[in-house]
Image (cartoon, rainbow, N blue to C red):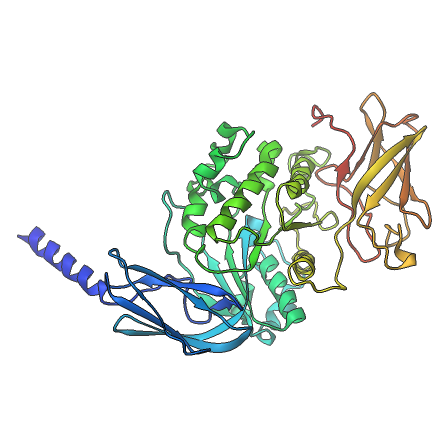
Length: 481
């Protein structure tokens, strides 16, 4: 009898819940919607019930009918940046969303270096955090949504979290890289910025992808891809996609920023292909195959030994991924590492460089920081290697070929001969030219050059604007580790 009563009560409660319109957590007060676009508004209602959505920016009424499972979705046209607005949603009962801004929306994802909040981790500070937290109220048009780590075996249609305005309390706990990125966009464009951060520390890229997407990634070690490197549920392939990407992919957004890769050192040789597959997957899920994707070069850290190369091998794969991912870019961090902290404190520079990349490439705003210089080619002439670079600014005669900001010793170079033994090398610029000469007394006939190609180093080459030279090697001696 008790079982029958419980069943009746459960049915009554379920029927009662159908009568109330419900939205996913990502849709709520204080949210930022993508400007000048057609955005998704969706949720649950009584099956077959008419649902109306009326935004205050144009008072247009959008109508649809809930499906048999109660789900509904409407496509709503947004204006240019502005607000605050409200949205009335009804299926007979009225639900009103308030303080809605219209602007630019970005997804900020990755592992712990994206997760690291403005106030830092315990014993691991973020440089300048107090000033940023104190000034948070000066940026009321920055709104933020954080998804807590939520692994799931099956795709979810909702998540935890809420939209928060920029205040000292909300900013202190939000992703530092994400916030500094959004702050710089807001300062330059003077429009609202919405930041959504799904992140999870210590996790490889595979959990952020579906199992199908991994299987369809050609020429990778499938066994490694499906073998978790840490004993936690979040490390399982597809689990973070299911719990943290699936619930938000209906939320119309401009693009992605990504800071991850530290946990893929074990299969660095597949990382470029996996990253390209993940980007392709996410773009399909957002139904926009040209969404910008900007990501962060991993910063120097000793890992399994300062002299080893497990990290630069991943960095090499990160840059190789650019060949496979259209409308993408990467910011260099060769100068931002820390010898004792895997979470380097200079997150502000990373956010600034990501913002400069987005402002230039996505918003076509000129005059900002150019890309970091990269090796172009090397010519071996007797006892020296002559390097030329791409990405060296040429808009000022004084800047042509001027890679050393301070004018001191250029550090971080090594050269090797046929014996494949690398020795520290001296580097000097040929004044007025985009050329650098590298030599070592211990190598009479060099055949290979490396720069910053160690887990941790003192490499210091940069442009006069402060962009660091990207790590490189001219050899492919894969047996060296």
